[in-house]
Length: 301
Image 1 (spheres, rainbow, N blue to C red):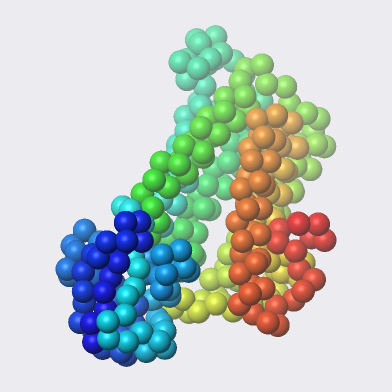
Image 2: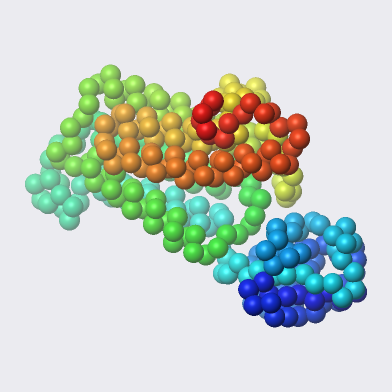
């Protein structure tokens, strides 16, 4: 049967493809790519209506009620880049930038500042920052399983700008020769909170990875397992974000640095947006989803 592909933005016909009723949306994207080379599958979002929902790759034309002469609408998502590539770039930057500023280059602090004594707290903060982003890089390579292979290329510049600029801002103040460390109890209390939160964050990422078999997009209700750090699944849909925020709040307590606190709050805002979206999707997708869960902050949000 023949299906006409219409451009969502201009309502003009892009092409007509010959395809079988049992074909999937993934097959449709492949056919379009053959006819319109620039529109590779990852760049396409296929819809039944111009402003409708994006169709899943595994849906068949027959199940969607499409017949000979039907129309599908295509939204061009623009140039794409791999999720893992974006993650590696946005996490490698903070690692390199922080360690560079930690060395107190004269360009930031002058010759006198470069030779001034570095506090124990600054050393601990550098170790924590390195641990966090090294962990993120390793998780990207060995732990995460992405439901989508790509994201818009613009996200590379947006995400990297956020992480890299905030890193320079925090690193400059924590490693400044005039930095004043809080008391020892506060420093080590913040350090313990940071390390526990990092272990919790990793535990959630591993639990989420185990929910999705390799090479699939299967989704299941995340639940606590034998790892005690996964108990937060009883209270929130996205405990990985909860632990992430707790890490940076602990880092802020440890350093008593305002830029670190601003970084923690900015992260909480963005992660709350993501968590609320995921929480709504869970409620729509699973009728048996636990009703008492919040998105990111237990009992509150």
